[in-house]
Image 1 (cartoon, each protein chain N blue to C red):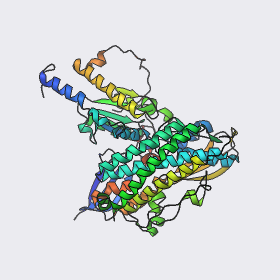
Image 2: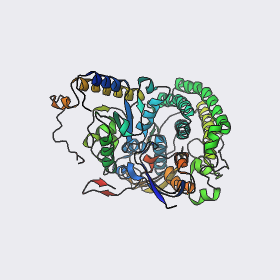
Image 3: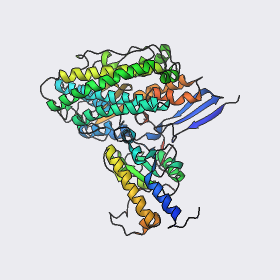
Image 4: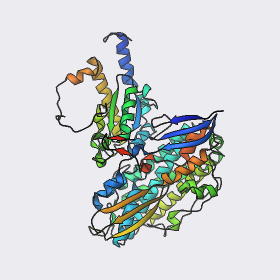
Length: 177
Length: 372
């Protein structure tokens, strides 16, 4: 659909997306701890639905993909396929120590080096597992990122930004084609 | 009618974890089930051989996020037996308290998920709300909601203060009241009775033949519980009952789990009230003598066994993990035959599957870095 970037309808879409992010969770080889904490987020104590955050089963309906845990070799191509099925603009949150660098499983024989080797990650959450409030915080961070990207005309602008963090050169990870 | 293969997973709205079912169906009836479980295989058994006893416990806790205390306890129990250590009673009681709190959170979680798969989301919300009380207690005692890190070889790492004991005891009456309500609901709530009764039936003979364990077996009338038949920790000193049921269907499994919830609250109460004084750990040697042991434990899902072989160093030579879900999958494949396709989620959920525990084996092509 050809919508002008600054048009009324685009602004409406951006507004609606930020007010009701739909999430899909993919267990790419986690120990279940992250998964149960995500479900705990949906429950009366934390109740993320009051923010419009809804967990959907199908990646085709989702704005944000939460990858729980590191990625096993067997799951890598499946995770990539799930990510490809999501509509643009799509965002990825990698959960926990495993999502960031493999955590306690770093370097085992059936592991990818990191989630970022398979799908591009936008937000990392620390913890083993992260507490539900940290997960909500990550989603909110992701929403801010979305708003920032939308204001600059899409996700592309971040790639053009000069890197501020650590240099990623020489990172030894295999990218799934 | 010709047979049709329905493939479900590894990513599917009805699944909480990656598993692949190939259901061979004739119309609405299931003829056969083929499973692929190994999506979450991580190679923990191999990694455990390369880490010393201090570093291996956090790794083994992460076999499963729901029964993390079970894996750490069964391993340290085995190593302590090889080393010939005797653990102070206070440590045994603290381990028991954490174990039973873990069983409560796991069963409440299960009851919620089972209600969710039959579309009874109100109960899903209720049980998970009550589960937060258990999580709070666990967090107060151990500092973490999910991976507690309480165990070490020779005892536990954290002591319980009187304030923690008091806070835990204060939460128990509320939980007991809620659990009483669940017992009543399971027996009278029409929504649950319709979907649970006569679904996934398994006789006592079948349960024994296919090696079902835990609540799945006890619901079919198999009177077996490691906590009573091979007592460990403080279970021999605590008064409690093994819950069995004769229905053999999903209804029976629900009744057993809800009954166990009640027993768990009573065990926790007894242990908190009769917490012995004394040290919480003994100094363990760095290395273990040469030996072999099969350490058993009643995890929330059933009998968990670690086979441990040591060779006189500070690492294990081999650790083999037999998780309860692995033992229960065969019984699921049997239960599903001749049932409706729509009943797959509830029958599978009835064994409380934990795929992270179960992924013990996979085929890896190291050259192409592909898992099959």
